[in-house]
Structure formats: C-alpha cells, structure tokens
Length: 229
Image 1 (cartoon, rainbow, N blue to C red):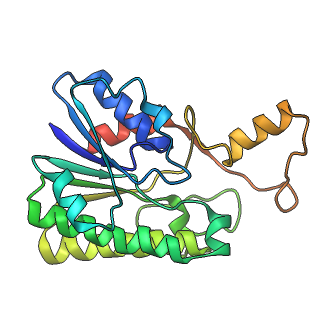
Image 2: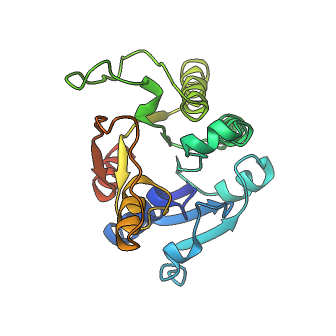
C-alpha cells in the first residue's frame, strides 16, 4: 500500500509514519508537510534514507502540490491541521484556512484521484464539554464546539460527511481524545508540565484545577488508525 500522509512531521503524524514502516515491509509513505511551527523534520530524520519514504514540502491548500503527491497512492490519512486552542482564540483565520479550506482541497483530490480510503483525524473537542465528570461522549453525540479550533474541526467533519453522502467518498472520521508520547510539541500540556518542573518554573493551573482529561498513548492511536485503513 502507498499512503499519502499529510502533516507527517507533526506529533501524531511522525509516530504513524514510524509505526507503518516498522510493521509493514511493503508499505510506502509519501509525507506532505508544510513544516510549520509544529512540524519538525528531526522527528523523522533517521527515516529519510528509507527507500519506502518520500517527503514533499507543501501545503494541503495547494491543489497542484496535493495532486502531485497523491499520484500512485491508495489512501490518504490527514494529520495536517492547526490544533492549538489558545492560538485559535488569538487568530482563527489560519485554522479555517487549513482545517476547512485545505481539507476541501484534499477530499476533492481524493475523490478525483480514486483513492480507496480517506482517513481524517478530527478531535473529541467537536463535542464540547461534559456537564459533569460521570458522562461520556458517543459517536452520535451532537457537535457543540467551544473554541474556534474545535469549530473549524467540526466544520471539516461536516464537510467530509457531505462528501460521503454526495459523492460516496470512502472516508472515515476519527475523533481521538488527547494524545501523549514521543515527538509531542513542547507547548502541549504534558510536555509543558514536564519541562516546567525540570526548569523549576510555574505549573499552570486551569480554572480551579478540577478539570479532568483522559489521555491516549500515541502508539495506541497509531494502531487504531492502522485498523481503519
């Protein structure tokens, strides 16, 4: 299988590239990445000599670059996204540009390119917040995003759903909870807590410190993504 991975130098993307190349000798990866602040080429530096791996520098909003990268691919898995809540509050435009407009370019390319599977990484934040710590979300829970970031992801999910119904796009939307593990960007919660402790700095407390989050180890997420492919 030849897979176009978008955002493959990011946190989950780079772990997924490693996972697939480690588990499948016949897997080929094309990594399309814009190398923005959250994309680190060092995440896959040791993978680059592998003949099964190809890097394409570009943005998912660029239809020409996407079409070139997609040539010969059987599937697309989309990790490319603006994904920081606080940054989305400061400026929502980059989130709409990548998470909605860029996604539209990708799914149009997937439709015309005849890929067999399109897997889109969304987020559980499209569901909003639970009223208390005893409940849980289900796939059918209503979308109630609470930030420009989660609103842009919810919009992307609905766009994909419309393509599934209208064009029979062979797409799957995955909404994982917070991930943690190797290659995570330092501004994220767990790396930030660790580095602040090591530097004897302040540890930020959000609200009254009563919020609860569940976490997925990134390798488990990669294993689940492999199954839906």
